[in-house]
Length: 137
Image 1 (cartoon, rainbow, N blue to C red):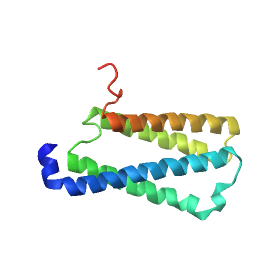
Image 2 (cartoon, rainbow, N blue to C red):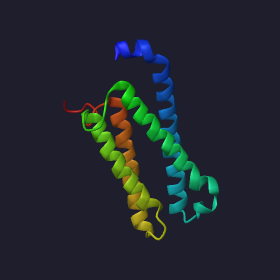
Image 3 (cartoon, helix red, strand yellow):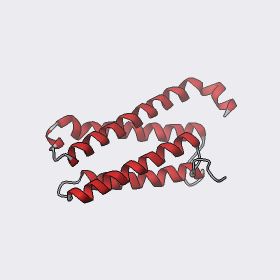
Image 4 (cartoon, rainbow, N blue to C red):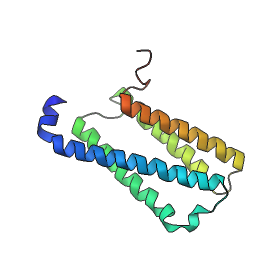
């Protein structure tokens, strides 16, 4: 990555910062909507909570793809990115069930908890670049 950074330092750090900002916004918006859902509040009546997560997640995905291309690290090639990608799919499915109208409260709470554990795993993999967070080799 040394030669890469010498040529592309500015764009890498800018894209990385956009990605990290979107991660924080995306998780925060999910926690807000999930918390409101668990509290029985109809968050769908607030327009920004309906469309803003889609914008943030689109920018998040775009920045992730851009970083992967810049760094030449790809899911299904690099183990840690494969783990992150698979966990992301699980997080999206769990989040969808959490926010789905008509889901019973207990199930919703279980899906929300599982989604939060999954996103914690994703962040851990991103920080360590290791599917097992560098534990146990």
